[in-house]
Image 1 (cartoon, one colour):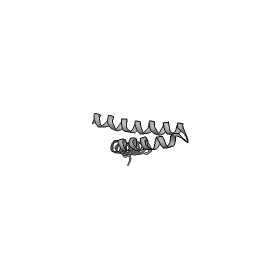
Image 2 (tube, rainbow, N blue to C red):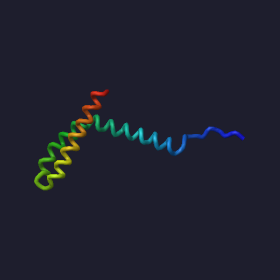
Image 3 (spheres, rainbow, N blue to C red):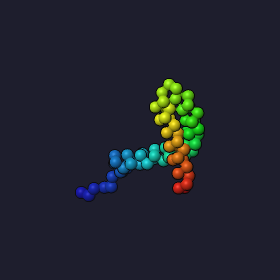
Image 4 (cartoon, one colour):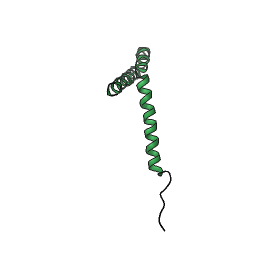
Length: 77
């Protein structure tokens, strides 16, 4: 007997397609909200600095990274 073509593509194909889908969703989120995240981080970081300077630095870095990613993706198109 001959084998028929499988339906759906299997586990790895589905995993790949889901990863691509959620990757696009995350990309769109950061493209749309990168500058807002940076502004919020710039507002919150000084308030956190007195209690936990390392956390304040981490928040500032994440905010700047989100804005940089947004700007880079806008330049690349």
